[in-house]
Image 1 (cartoon, rainbow, N blue to C red):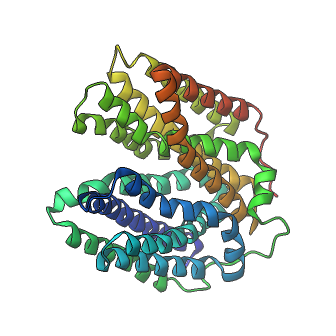
Image 2: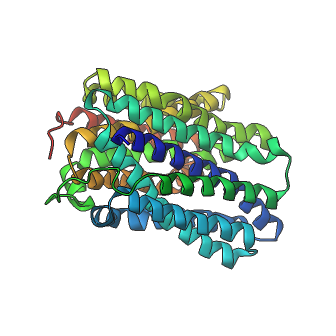
Length: 379
């Protein structure tokens, strides 16, 4: 079994797990809401897996170095299966919160293992397209998942069991990959997350900004759309525009990374984000700008993360790649965490103009970082 064969098998398995998460998450939120829990409680529950990822990603490279990619991935699958079984078999916030902790731990292992392997094994001349294709699969899973319950017409419990089946398939794929199918590189003296953050702070900052735009604006943009008088369904489509942009732009971003100077690609992306952020200030008189800006935020924000992962693959080698990948994931997760708070606060205190100014400033920071990027040298 070739290394790239392992890459695509694990990438496919990870996409299925993301699909299972995208199916289960809204179902669980609706069940909790119908049980009388407030939106704050529902939101706090939804944050648990992401919090676990943020806490554990810095130490995952050491786990990968000790266990190897395949073994760590298998254990991540087991923890994900335990989580989804907890959702399907359990009932109530306490049980589901424990399951969410398990799922978050598993996600930290799966996410870092898959992306480190992709970055390490993809041919240098095609790294951008390989990473872009993988991210497109994840985007498709995230976009499709919320629609599955309506498409199937099932009640909540059968839908959760469908998610269990998806995760079980992922476990079977992981078990079918031989433990030594990947050749683990020799120990690297600078393989940790913190070393990578110190070595590539500008890339980490760009990943954080990408997280704000792709993962941190859906709720706030939909809430603003609702406040302008749009109904629930129409307002929700603003968040959907972010998802559509994310899905559509990953492969083109990877293609650009393979064919153009990295700093120029990052700078062009930052300028697009700046233009979209300025445009949203005029959404009060031209509401369609909300959807247009959403497509750019999701597409280009997601592309920033994809591009940073491509650069990590060029800049770090061997086991150091896992630390570099973890550093970018840390930045992206931080952006997705602070994005709703920062954008919501700006909107509350300064209106849509304040939101546009805040996001425009972030885009300019990304442009500043892009113009100071050096050509990657392997570490």
